[in-house]
Amino acid sequence: MIEKGFPALLRRPIQPDEAATDVIRGLRVRKPRIIVPFRWAPFSWVRGFFNILTDWHVGRQHEMHTLMRELERCRDRQN
Image (cartoon, rainbow, N blue to C red; front, side, top):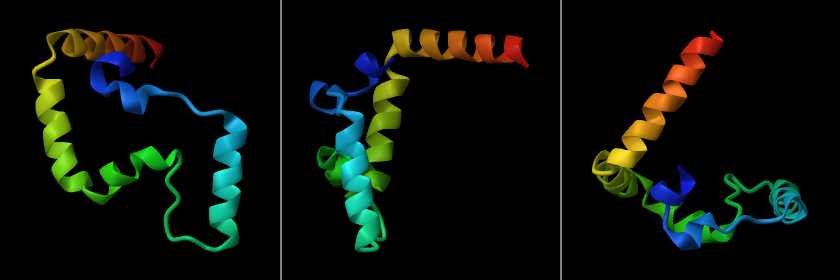
């Protein structure tokens, strides 16, 4: 699902210690929000507009619809 829903730039994973270091740094200076990795920051800044685009993109992905329905079926069986 990640491969279908996000561009390549946003799919690159970060190491847990990198995330932890950035979170701790942000907490120490009492940042109001901490975005790790920083490449996600522009999407946070424009998230209202971005959400419209991602909803449109996901809405056009038939394979994504199939995956979502499969996840929901699995969840329903577990409950």
